[in-house]
Image (cartoon, rainbow, N blue to C red; front, side, top):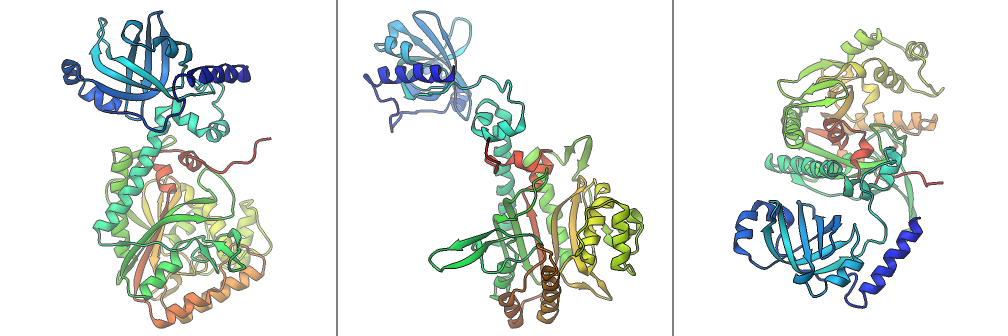
Length: 481
């Protein structure tokens, strides 16, 4: 059936190309359809000769008159093709199909039925559609199919297009906010000799010219902190990072992240800054300080609370992290029926238990502060509480939506923590961090006290209450069988 349709449309294209180009390089366009609708009364009154373009989504052939409903990104309009008004009406009548792109020159008018329309004096097919455009996603409710054919999904569904307009607004708001706050946008390489800045399994690739293996970055952090050593004070980067781990509603393998670093500030200063940012983001993306996540309402307004990691862990997991052993944690994890590996470290066990017992309770926006040092190798210790670090996580909707801390700038302490990570990696933990001698050397030259913060496009997905890969236009998919 599809091949028959394609064959028929190809024959129409061949016939049309005896008269005109099927895919011309240049097209006349005086006005977008959305702007035409805004100015329609004045345009119809003037009878000014203009040119419009759009894709055909509706055709009604009434013999000597054809009504074509066309759309562009800004709006829609009815183009009226009349035999007695057009020298090439016959050619167009036998060639035009739904899905074709149409260019028309003529003037705006209102039909006897009161419909805003455009009377064409001349019209051309400017791009022939060889496959029929689905009128609706009938039979395509399956999300996998929609994601594979995302261009059709957004073509027939304006709500899908709107998601990506909002996502562009999301990142523009982040960028403009930080620039207004005095931060400088910078850019660093995606390929790294040593991946760092997060606990994640990296992707590897080979550089032919250098004949070396490199890693795709798993974080933006370490190069930005080296720039603090180099004299910069307020910097940020928005870029892609890559983590070779599982897919679920909140995780992708490659995604966009923002990280910013602020010299002579600490994590208290950063918390004030990012609370202000997130409220701006909510207003920009959803037009409100309230959003939905399933049946829950998330209120981004008001003053966000600070809640202690140790306190909540004791409350929901029943474990006092101040004097707990690795074996105690392992027993608790088994009691909770968590998937464990024999080599799981104390920090990994704490994180697994936290995600099961604590995180689901954190629905309203808050700062989860001062976790144990075992789970954060890049943050400063809390003065007088060496078992804790000065880190905060933004929590909302039962998930993490950003992380920041007072940056560790003591090269001796940093080397020791890297060595602990290396021991975990040698014990089989693929997500543990590697020793980064270049970064430690940079710290030895001196890095100013600083606060850092990172957030990803997960924040956007939570604000619009969608799975994260639904907010990516072309997410990676398994090959179709």
